[in-house]
Amino acid sequence: MSQVDLFQQAADILHENDRGHYTIPTKGLYPFQWNWDSCLTALGMAWLDEARAWTEIDTLFVHQWDDGMVPHIIFHEPDEGYFPGPDVWDVGRETPTTGITQPAVAGFAVKRLYERCQDRALARTRASALLPKIADWHEWFYRCRDPQQTGLVAVLHPWETGRDNSIDWDVPFEQVPTEGVGPYTRRDTQHANPEHRPTQAQYDRYIWLVQHFRALGWDNTRLHDASPFQVVDPGFNAILLRSCADLATLADELDMPALAARQRALVAQGLAAFNTLWSEQHQQYLCQDRVSGELIDSLSSGGLLAVFAGIDRTHAQKIARRIEVLGSRCSYLVPSHDPADPRFDGRRYWRGPSWLIVNYMIMDGLLEHGYEATAEKILRGSLALIRESGFAEYYDPLSGEPCGGGRFTWTAAMVLEFLQRD
Image 1: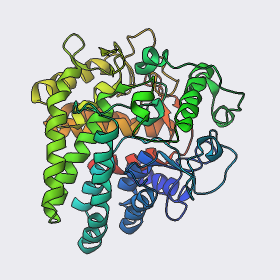
Image 2 (image 1 turned 90 degrees about the vertical axis):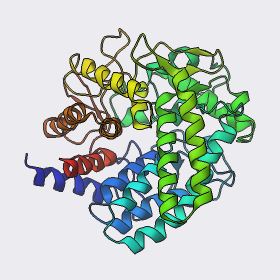
Image 3 (image 1 turned 30 degrees about the vertical axis):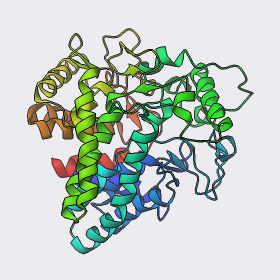
Image 4 (image 1 turned 120 degrees about the horizontal axis):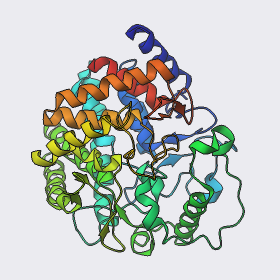
């Protein structure tokens, strides 16, 4: 398949899933607007329509909460095909949203849109309006998810990470009860193969946390300490720190020195704390269970995503080598978990499969640190997956089998990004 054909197929998927001022990830399985999906989708969309790309992120921030949080789903239109819907979350907003957040990739996305724009006046206007909102979101993280001011933020629900059923969460998730969770009907397994989705036991705990936070009135000043699940994820923190750093650079360009200074202070504190997550034994970063204080012995792509931030060169070099080792264990980089781990499952969501959005961020981090050869392997493998298996949600890294939803928006957006890089 030629690059022109790939480009056209990706563009067709973006148009198909476009709802005018936001995109859905895919029909049926995900019928609403997702937070980090939209930000990463905007990068691909910009190759087709710059103004529409800015609108994608603008729409997300229209629904920012008063305390600064940006929710992980916005329920623009009713749709009974998804669970848990607005009635389960019950956040009390005019346009319903969820009550949790997702990886803060918006700062990175906005800087990238700005630096490669064709319409400088448009970009300056849209970015200037977005920067204070994104900065408020970053401040919210350190205020509400790092109350002890460690420099690293915790996630309180696996869905916040975007890596819903990662092996990283197995041990801390055992502290989440399931008592009191009433009967419910999952919708995801009606749209995708149940063998590719989280288990029922995991879903019970997901819903328990939602009900627990709802009982606390979604008060973000209380949720952190009240949650039995508090995990410091290196990938989540790396995305946040990269966005803080990018926001600072862009704020300098847009004459916002105070905003830039505060974002740089957050980066400095976060990077200083980041090494507490390093495992010399495993040659990558690990998650930390904040409740127990222990590092979690789980070798996921979250620990590799750290290269997306400005980590020290020694650790970046070791992560590049670690990715090369993983490349010898699977056909398609980057697996979401090490295939050598007996818990690896190449088709079950985030317990093994490769995702193009993770590939993109890891590749970008490797290029920032100068590891072009390893980044090139990720690029080539990603495009090979598309040519062989189409625009799926994710892929078995051993066989290349397409898994999850089909005609997936952010997969198509990343293909447009990879093609431009290529």
